Amino acid sequence: MEIFFQLETYVALFTLTIIEIILGIDNIIFISIVTNKVKREERQKARVIGLLLALVLRIIMLFGLTWFIGLTKPIFFNFSIKDLILLIGGGFLIIKSALEISHKINVNFDEKLTSNKAISFKSVIWQIVAVDFVFSVDSILTAIGLTDVLLLMVIAVVASILFMIFYSSKISDIIDRYPSLEILALSFLILIGFTLILEAAHYEVPKGFIYFALFFTLGVELLNIKFRRVSLKRIKIKK
Image (cartoon, rainbow, N blue to C red; front, side, top):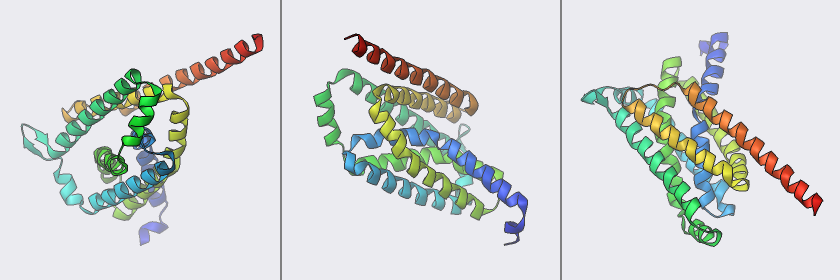
């Protein structure tokens, strides 16, 4: 327990927690969108259950470090189990997001309501767990690379999941209020899906470029929302 009396320990913990939260941004966006498919009164419950199950999964993965590190060892044609997980996860994100965009473009409001009621609560939870497993591959490997203290890894992962539980509801409400932001978020998930596939093929895409693109387009869309709001006020005043 001597490590908890060293400044380096808290610096490592803070750094690891921030990185875990940043790597969880993609996850928060997906969770915010997918939980909007269930009834409003069940959305927070779906987020909490799904993320708590994901937390258990991540902790199990941390305690199975030897097994997890083995996922990065090539099994055939220089491809590892980690690469296959990223490939399947990236494909899932692209297909899921593309279908959601198509659905929102091609159905009317009444059909959308009917469609939302048909979504299974359990299906949403397992989608959260499955996607979190894909995103946690990079997260766990990052944790292993920053520190060899298992307790610090567990604390950082718990902190990042609690952050997701708290902020996913707020992001979900914003996306529900502004449909154009949902299209933007889904497009971003398609981009993330492609980067996962490229990573599986051993082509590294700097995460900084991805997040810069996200925040830049988000800023432009927020300006558009403000512009539309001001325009509506002007029209009402003229009337």
